[in-house]
Length: 487
View 1 (spheres, helix red, strand yellow):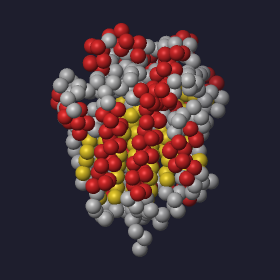
View 2 (cartoon, one colour; view 1 turned 30 degrees about the vertical axis):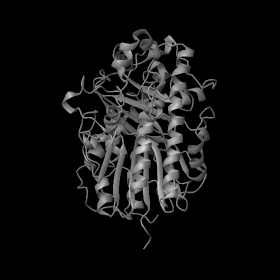
View 3 (spheres, helix red, strand yellow; view 1 turned 90 degrees about the vertical axis):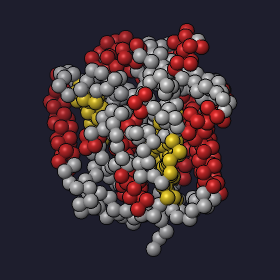
View 4 (cartoon, helix red, strand yellow; view 1 turned 60 degrees about the horizontal axis):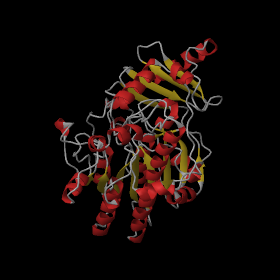
């Protein structure tokens, strides 16, 4: 019987799909991710099931869309049931870093958790009902320093805070930066590990989620790099749906994640913002490489599956927006690399449509664990082993009203190879883009008379998909499980 592989799942937070040098972003400095792409399989059209942290992560760790789980907000509770399945199959399951489970300190099926959740939040001022000091909070307190937050940065320099658009320099010692702390904790834990049973190690980094505040050394790497910067004009902003306009207003009047946003920053401001974001990705690239090197030294990669991905993206100024909470490509399209010599073909770049939650059955099959019958996720192994096989006909994402996306009761996206439709529940407005003619998603065809028939056809497919998913959710999770394929 083949030995069960170690499984390493590394999830960054809010990393766009176009941030890896080897995958069409030559401005990025990502040598270690580039190497993983060269040695493994990269999916260039992986889409999150929700442009929101908890909804997306709940979907990944349960194998189901948000509507099956009723997880539409960052405060909803959920449990990653398949982690327990790995534990029952003999795996030692460890999470280091961010999970964004609720409550924050829930075990979620893991044997051990070293949680780091609160990059920007000052817990004594907000979220009192679920406030908790994580491992990073404790480390900062032990070092006698105050964690930089939206409150400390604004108090120190109100005018500079308003101009920064969320981009700052990390002012404390570099080792105390959140992602460095997470990587160092992972290196320490791996050195201390004595167990011989198979390992499921899930590392959740906090970056490049805002605030965009990497240490100076990484910012300097992009000092003269000419990154692509979006051009947004007033005409495009005026054509946006009421929900998107409301989202921009909330971002401009609120203070989320240290971002004082403006819909029309100039090119230099956007370039500075994107350089800081890129710098954080480069830091992640470096630290991911160090963790993988440690795993290799300890013999943990001789039989292993390594997956690098992110929960959702960030608009970074696209369409006059920052953050996520919409269905534009920058928010819903994420990187996904599968590295497993002997299993994943080297140097394969696959452009088939896949959903982020498809990682779940992929990992269960790797461990020889049956996949629950009611899951809507699909294993990636057929696409990895036969790159010419067709992927999904369409991918979907869901987003409900919350304290940031306040206008639409529900947004549901359906995207196929050419068309993207976004349905707003109870509204006459929506979005329809021809991605072949308009890859930048600037021309909304929702009200275009020539496309009304197509719009109704795509909305019909979208609604049928959700009804079918609701019916599927009635299947008991362990009823007629799908048998894992041999990988």
